[in-house]
Image 1 (cartoon, helix red, strand yellow):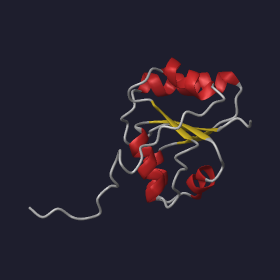
Image 2 (cartoon, rainbow, N blue to C red):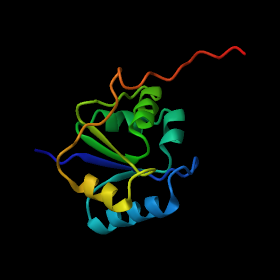
Image 3 (cartoon, rainbow, N blue to C red):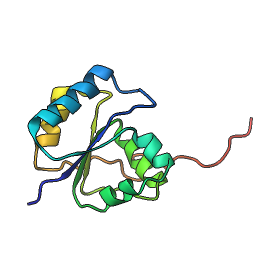
Image 4 (tube, helix red, strand yellow):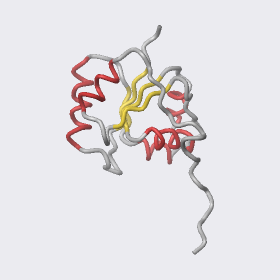
Length: 130
């Protein structure tokens, strides 16, 4: 079994992830010697339709340290790079501790947790009328 690819989002622009959590996760990843990729901000990468997102979505199993799984799912979808629901795990730095995030990233087993169509509706593209 191949180890999953790891992606770390630094959430540089929205700044919704607590600084102490994201800094600790990044430090522990660097200290671990494990190969990982980092993006400054997934929201920004999605808005630019960064080709990195497509490459990662197509890489097989993937673990992502970012924010809510539903948000990550739709950020990749908005970049026309849908994530495979059966081989993607998102670790939520907004609600989990740095130790929980790193432990999850280091596990070789992927625990898929993207919401299904029944769990989370696609973001609306319709404009609301007052």
